Image (cartoon, rainbow, N blue to C red; front, side, top):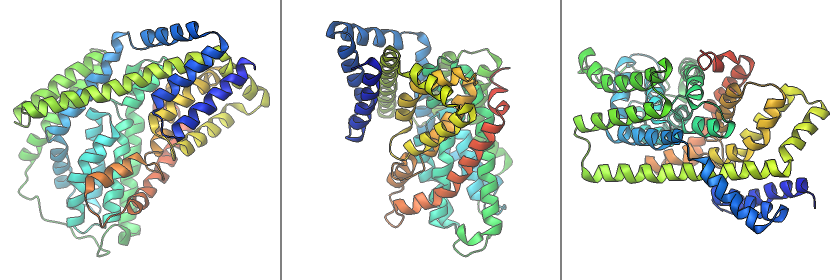
Length: 439
């Protein structure tokens, strides 16, 4: 058996393990260890695992993972998400479809300090969905816009998917963060245009009465109280992203400053006690260890594939077939979107990137641009059946038996189509992804 055949068998075995329910990290490590064992020896395989684990996360740069997760956790318990939605709701109260627009706007701002789509879906399911239903929006639209706009959490920096891509592709995490700003704003804008179009062209899909009635509620809100609510979140966003963009902070330093700022906000709002602090710290530990473990597994998997010569063979085959850079890109994005229907976002990136990145280099593609396209394509999987993590997160947080998972998938479908449109725009205009990153 050649090393190349063994590489294909390792990938097939790993996919079988994942389908059977094995944790993606364990599947990557087990198949990589066994493949190296069969190619070399048990002793070399053991040293191979140890070297990969040591090299994968020993750099201080990986402190960015727990720090940004910690910041997101503090922000979630401080009530900033509800306040942000209240401000957008008040500003857009007289606009047709205003609560839907408020949800997208609040999600975009919230995404700039959490980096986790599931956190956005959980928070705004409880905050925005009841408000929209109470004001005459259809339940299907209410849950659809929450699920759809939650994907902004993985594109607008800081983003855990951007961190993982940066590590695997050996690209600057700071540049990856910058690269996500304009695509994230573009996607949020397209979501808003979709809601406005639906509100005017097909109001029955949004409003239970079929017509929009401007609400006079929230008139007790003033510009002063709205500014008071919005000020903490604005300071945090400016502090973290401003520090990153200006080069004053490294990504790890920005994470530390952001976590400290979010901690102070939670303290000043009296939303933090010893029990909540312990829960925040333990949850941060769980999430961080899971991410770092996956990074170790991905490093081992990448080294195993390189040892088999599989990436080089696939690169050579694709270039020889004459598929071309655009043909390869379209095929890759389609595969990623289809994989999103059955496995989670991180798993897709860990499986696919070690195989395709050498091909990207061979075609001379910009890896930062390619990373943005990958994240958007992967994010589509958060809204597509049967996996749809964001959809199931909304369902679990909703606690409303009258709204089914099918309703949420149906409500989110227009946002899936908009994400595909955004993917096409970003593919055709690479500067949208690379302009800020290269400055």
